[in-house]
Image (cartoon, rainbow, N blue to C red; front, side, top):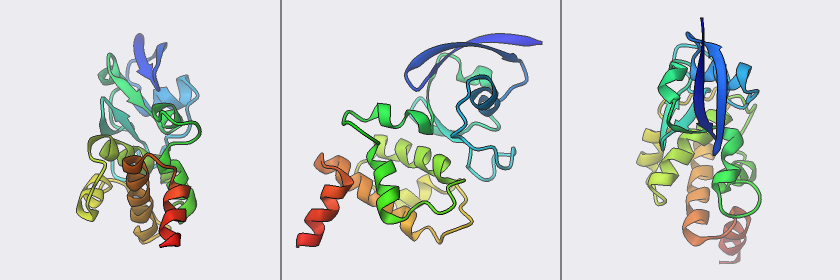
Length: 173
């Protein structure tokens, strides 16, 4: 049985007919072609599928798609559009500059979790970052570079600069 849902994905209103048992992740990937959110464990354990629903990070692999109807959903593809500046979101630049992304499989979910955190708190402590990313697993790194990337993005957002400019100023002092 198919159901037609009206979703708001990355700022765009979308009408989609999907099997009624579909999760938000299945809808994003297979019905809407948004493949940035990764299908890892299908159990809500790894965080690779994390997206932001109404400002809160959620595991899209275990969220029935009908629970996203009427909500604002932001995926990794929509992060740049949520930033008023031109170009990528500071989180995306920061991960590139700090080496926060290794193989990249977990990165979309981590970016979405960090995005939800920074929308709420632009001066997070290491503990705040650890709490926000607790549901995101990365097999490639010890998380140090990921934490540095989130801290750099937070500083860039607070100062209204690009992460590159924040690093340039820091290297001058």
